[in-house]
Image (tube, rainbow, N blue to C red; front, side, top):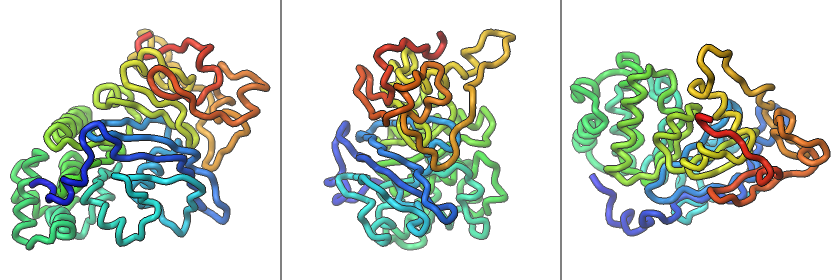
Length: 344
């Protein structure tokens, strides 16, 4: 099933900016006080492009993904600046009713844990059919027929029987395929995949990634892939964005990033990969711990963990993104340093 004529006419041509985030900053209030969670986020996703988001837990990746979907609860959040443009429309200015019209139809999302993303009280086929009926306005029978078609598309065997199953009756891999079927049910222009292979075995991970690769080619979707696995990012993405403490530290095309990262944090992540370690040696680790929620430093937020930081330089003034030959980097010493990439 293809998008209707109105959606096709509004869709950007391949290579145009489908998603643009401009100077976006967000605070959250898990308690009584607001804490800075995202700060001055700038990113762009072009039509047909796959962009990877990497960084340690707590860096802000999932919060950014939820912000792109308008899913951060307004009662505990405060947008300080910026905007998020999808197809030229600022989603941060939309009413909830208008956001619901975009979610699922134009932007789909695969959440981290399929068992919590699916309602345990309803059959999985009915949950996917609800998305189709809400956005397509089709009958129950037509929605059911598309559910079966989509289950075949995501390679769920015996789709008629699986559609009548409850989430707990399916394996983790099958639940993830159901979530993918739900996310692509209305053939969105943009798919946000938040750790889509978490808690899956290696074989199932490979199958899910191959499925996403095939769906991207068949549907010409743009994808934002959030992952801790840099090997997945290298294999699957066109560009990568490295996040730390709510900021983007580096963004670059995949090949030059893995050969010569420009930010010390990006280089440290690459050096911590097991395949980059000498045989039988103790694994190298990035010293220190990620900062707590709301961490704000007067200078570079990574300075207290960076082996290249210079007192009086890196820790005194806020650092902005600067252009490089492959993208952008948030480091005042980027032009002075020659950092190690993968396999070096």
